[in-house]
Image (cartoon, rainbow, N blue to C red; front, top):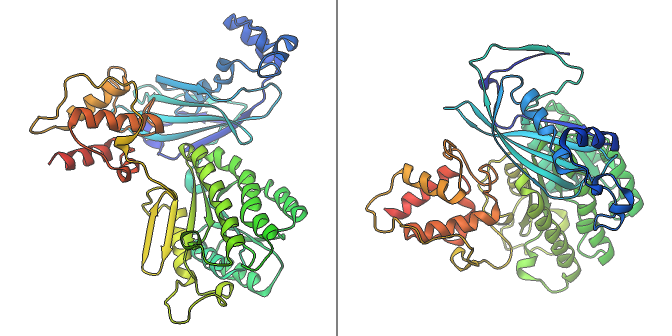
Length: 488
């Protein structure tokens, strides 16, 4: 395959590439000759057997070696100049396993023709290594053309638009499917039994020019669920999963938990690897506002929904920094056959289209959400985190030194002063452009460091951040806007 160098402007935020590596003990032997690393933990089975890992592990620098491939062959290619590399080993990596590498452009610095690339190494559901590269594209050099046996295809986020919807025969899920089809998403529609309603949804979606594949499985049946998972493993491009399936309120506790929790967990674990390859994904659980009210005789239903919501929170916490967000959308009563026996005829309830609109807005990034919990009732939508809140100011103090001179009493503060504070806090190298930085973009700026940063700015600038502003300050430009607003 013949390849030619690309220019800086040929790349966009969201461009990604993925490939696999399978490291063997022979790879270590070659690596050892070059590096001088002869640590027995990497090659001596007897020695490694008594370690906490139980067997030999791949050296971190061998695991990180594909970073050179990503910068030197893909983003951008031969005309690359690596300015900065940060990586962190998160889990042990073992020989003779298929390790997936995903590289994605997360930001661009137009003034310096620099791409910021986030890279993760993945073994099934585990992130083994995370890295960030700052690579300059040398457009001033002559373009090179070369032949390569392995072709690395750079893809756009917009190339991957497939959504899995469970309970697709239900009134809410049907509306979700139709609205997504209008936006061009390919669909996988799960239903418990084949019916005219699901066939009609398929027909309506395909009429809009998208594919709509029906998969039949009773999610309350572990065997049928297992068969469904085997089918889903053959689909490599699911980037959104909407779990709308649920047994009726009067179903057994076991069935409610099987569908609302265990099915959600199993299917999520099945599709997350493909989302990690793209570093983009949405998992949306249709919960219930009954958790706010705890109606009498709804204990089994609310318990099952609470279990599903807990799972959503756990995967959001684990994967959101890699572009995979998990949400609970908790509507009140919706005008569907599901709730007919429980609704008050004198109240105005939600309609399926309203719930579907919120789902589609989440998938297509058309809604500004604080936290990962959405409570939807007639006339209002509240977003946040389900449970208690903690003011940023009351967070545990860190060891960051706040003793240097501050700007509390300055009459004004310009962008360069804020940039200087950020550079001081993150100890960025000279010449590093923090202007386009942010959470999981700037080296060292992770969720824990973000809290420390806000405390640092509170101390130096004499301002206060509220808990609701934590998620609004994850990019440099947004942080500057809020700081300037507070200083007025």
